[in-house]
Length: 174
Figure 1 (cartoon, rainbow, N blue to C red):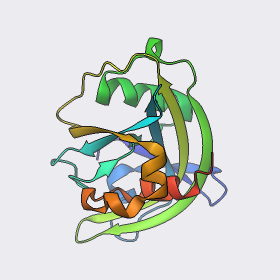
Figure 2 (figure 1 turned 90 degrees about the vertical axis):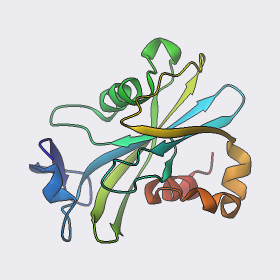
Figure 3 (figure 1 turned 30 degrees about the vertical axis):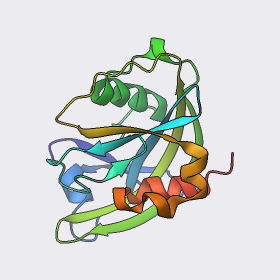
Figure 4 (figure 1 turned 30 degrees about the horizontal axis):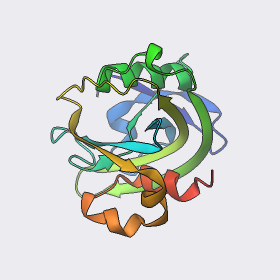
């Protein structure tokens, strides 16, 4: 709650910074965010379960990390930072971090808050899939065949997927 996020208009143009908690309560404030889909060289995606201590979407499965850049930080730099903080993935494990999409969404989490984000989608393929997850961030991990997940998302509903990941996956045509 002490961190500020970047408020944006529907075109992702910065409108200043707002308190992170304020951006995620009430009707929310539209702000910049990202999700990063982490793959291995076999075409599997790493699903990461959000820790049970997370205020929003605790225990839900994400593909793979999601967060917010801070003022002056690029989406790529913010993503690289979160990959290292959450999963122990360092830049020497990949060389293809790239932004592939961007979309706006708004979803309420019952009795807790809201996500109203212009969300960039980044992808990375790990040459070295050694991980060192932070238990404060990650509740569990699961490697899944991405093509199977993309073509059959209903088979994975019991995992309770994060809404931004489901949107990113529906929009992924590559």
